[in-house]
Length: 236
Ligand code: 5RP
Image 1 (cartoon, rainbow, N blue to C red):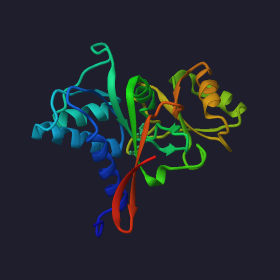
Image 2: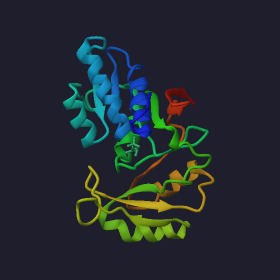
Image 3: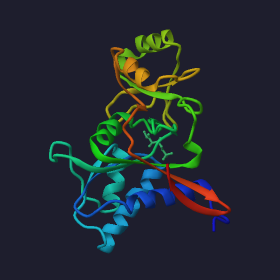
Image 4: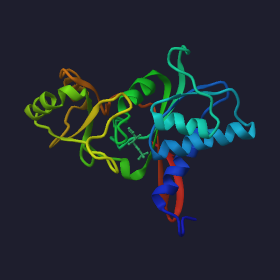
């Protein structure tokens, strides 16, 4: 089934589709950021176009999500215009067995945390490479920082035992600038023993806007896997 196809892409596509299938007509939908969620947005658009799904509105978590929503014909709304978000679909960089996450590989974690936390149901869509026993084992923790505070925040993070690196642009000289006009530190910790405590400690440093630890936010984790050459989706 996957012969000749990139297996990671196939897993992302299938899990994105599975999440999009859970959206019901009339819903307000949080639209996450990243390559996996991009497939979910595409399938939501296809369901709308076919008439199988009606009357949904998306709340984008990034410039990328709003561009994709427009491309696939999903009407958008804002947090000022709605009372609640019914369902959010978003990717992750790491998922632990308690459904805690590291997010922010696309530098969108601040808006993602706002939207995903407001959803009645937050579905995480990942391929199986994102599953870890302990957060921070494969992916550094993204921290969004106001530009003027980058140096003191780096020092404060070092005093907590983290090794921060300013995220640099690709095909752009200088640092990555977020949709909010800030910068991102990617922080390596020897071990993240208590994600809930670290999430709060980091957000307490003056100049930090938000970090990529999502503790107790995810309700459902859908995992795309390849088994015996077949692509399957399972729920954690
Ligand atoms: C963006 C994110 C993404 O959801 C995360 O990086 C996963 O991306 P992908 O689906 O491309 O692997 O947190 O800030």
